[in-house]
Image 1: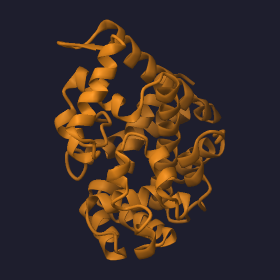
Image 2 (image 1 turned 30 degrees about the horizontal axis):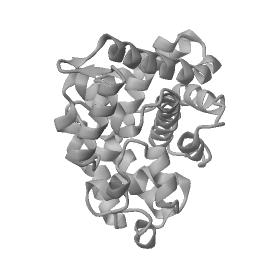
Image 3 (image 1 turned 90 degrees about the vertical axis):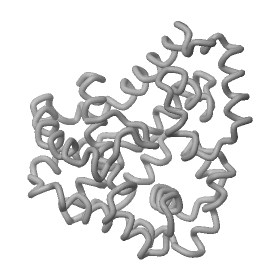
Image 4 (image 1 turned 45 degrees about the horizontal axis):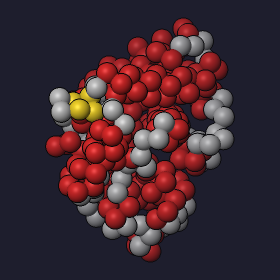
Length: 277
């Protein structure tokens, strides 16, 4: 199992997961549960597997969000919508959204996904582990979305670990990417960092020789490449539970579905920042 295959499948699974943020069916389900507004829905449904977590825990696992931004929802949100209610809403909304695009999900595909999920070593992967601990759904579309979400969060936890190991904090990760692709205009309004905080993060990166007047330096580009490659390597291990043929078949089945979700209901570019499938 190569890291390249893991990355390719992540892009597909990420897109399936993202219906919970952008699809009107999903957002309607969140609002019906009491999660009013895009970001309350995002924070409430994504953090819900952790239980009624406080601001510190949510900030730690979300990593690249400003604590002040998250504090608008956490922990008060759990008084309005308990975690178990948020979990039910996110599943119902995701199923309703996927039903618009997905026909029958073969049992064989779900069996492969479940085998991969069950092969994950969850040590050091708090958000992935919290999702993995949830019951496996009986409804096929719910199971598909849950598998996509669990593996997506497993990769995300690993990405955070690599960033932290390289001494790149959450805002610096955004600023480093912005120096490469100019993504600040999409990201900044959706993560809660102030202009002064962005400037300070850029100065820290400049002092380390990672960015310059014209964007990324060669050192910064090498670091970004290393971070992505190491993230992919760490994400690849559980996929060894399936054969290359099974994973290729899974990709062939799900990639057209993911492509059918872009640009509606899943827009690109978007604040999540995943590549197009």
